[in-house]
Image (cartoon, rainbow over all chains, first blue to last red; front, side, top):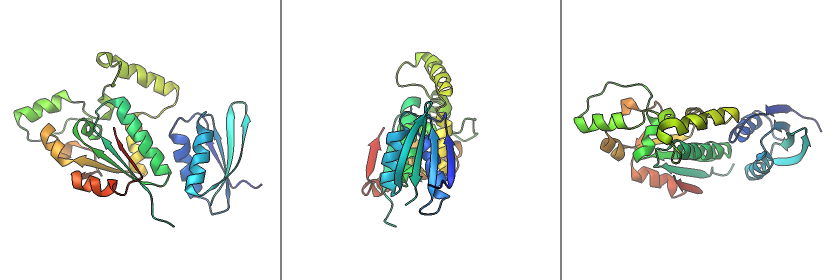
Length: 75
Length: 159
């Protein structure tokens, strides 16, 4: 999987991870992949719901030392 | 692309915590690509006040109202545990620790995301607030304009 952009949203609280993710994905072309790093515990549910509603594809997530990583493909 | 969904929020409350909730939802909805409107009425209008004193012509009652109400979002009190102003100080400290955005920052972010901020003109008259005293780039309207947005709104909240 090629990652086209990485967004560091670590330390940010609600609603910033989702606001920043939206801004970052606006800068991508359809089919490109965004990687998001967050420390917000609600981010997984937030990003999956947001991706589904906004027509993007939530590819996968990983957890690494309290940092949540997400990969979203722009729809 | 299909037509955008709409979120409308009536911000009636002048409490810092409730206004925070309203603005967090508004920013979230804007990230959801909704067209977002916040209609400020009664005490909620204080969220739109500039923090400095603006010279405008006012009657006695209007002047009193102006002095008694918080001048701007940052000066609003909490709906619970206000403790004569200590509550907001404590919560702002905690917010900083958790990296949460302050209310003025949330309002700025909402404007950046093109959330439509509307001030209710009827209650502006009641509370003696004038356009010069409120933030730039907001709209002025009444119940009909709110309903026009709300009737095809997917999310409509009263806070």
